[in-house]
Length: 612
Image (cartoon, rainbow, N blue to C red; front, side):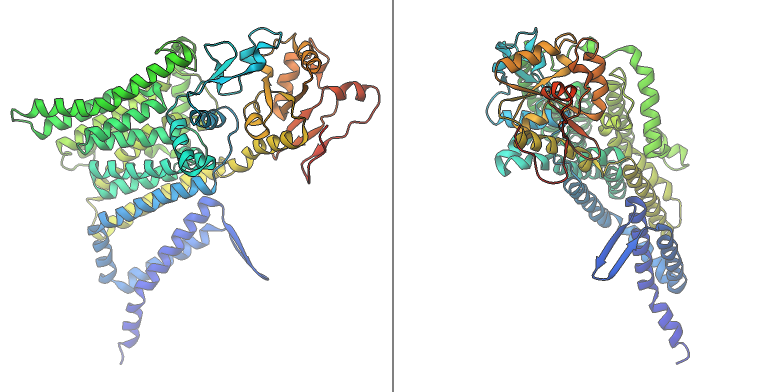
């Protein structure tokens, strides 16, 4: 009877530990997301302070360890021994979380250059080769009309009066397949689903490299990466190309050369400028096949057969690209982006190296750079050297990442952190290599400590990543991008069917959502604005200027010295979008306003104005 309270206390160690772990997980989620609120009638629950949750969780875990004693330690030891089974669950949860994030916080919008370029090209592929006729080009009097009639993401085609996409076909073709199966809205599911595939392939690659725990850790960190989260919510090619390269690397490591070839082919179709990375995957395929039969007469034949299986889909992709580039741009070596001399310069290498390094460390902490020590992990940690296959894969992973980075160092210099998106394939591989070191780091610890230390490190790092993504607006992009659909809806419902919209940032989305012809103002001669407006009015078309708030100064700088209309010195007829404003100007309102007549401005609070 006297030891009954002690037995009762010992029996509480498991629920105390479970509740403590749950509170720590909730605290991490609150720290990452900023908290949440729930209301049920008069009861309102607010959770915004992660530190109380984390503190309470740690106290309960400490109590669980004290109450459970050896049982608590044995549970941790069992968890370490069963880590591969738990790793599978963690990786699957991370992949599902990536897909859900992409769907729940996705922009579901085809605005600006990239998103409109990919989505609209997908719709063109459903009708055939993506060459679009522009009949207005044969009517307008200004020079190079196809350029002014090319929305963002497009350029003049080889035939007069046509425009063609500038972007590679890989993602649009995938989107077209999705749309054929699930309808036009399915184009926005492609990136979330491929985001889940990228996370899962990271796990598979990490499992081949250093075990299931390492692979799951890498998968969780990729799913939480600020660069990944910023892109998985947008219909752009950065996440898809990452998924395809990871599939290729896993196929090479698993002795599946045809799978590796398919992944490489899809990656090249999605981002042709990263084709040099195919050399690393080819080496991995051949070396792996040779090593499996090393010492036998069949080694060379095995390597040759693997090379053929790998190169078959890659060769098909290259031939398709050559045909398409010839049809669209006139040469298999041309691209929609321009010539290599226009795109790359040695002077860009140093500033890009500084920017990418700073952005990577700021958003992912210096720990990601531990991947550079992967080939030397055994010596650095005072343990046995990695096995020859693991050491070889360390060097191959670093070589792959180096190729990816080197493809973008000479590229144009940008000032926004989210251009880390270019390096996403390398970031994923860096996680695989770094987590291999992390698992090796905890091995010298007592068995009961290993799973706790390894998990705590991953949870803290992932929490920081998600919090960084939140602070940098990854979960606000749907709201920020909603202006494209809002402007298109206004144009569709409130402007005449024959309206011609002079714009730039909105030049594609106004076509998609508004069903109206657009003209790029940045491709109109600075002295030609008045003449262009007069021609459109004489031909029975109603011109309007559609400008985002930040574009107005650019518009004035370009046209005001040569055109009264370029001054924008009259009220806009409508303003839509939050927080970024999109303003519609009717050139006919200028004369009425200067004559003293009031010009009303409609703002998107309720309803739509009548057609003017």
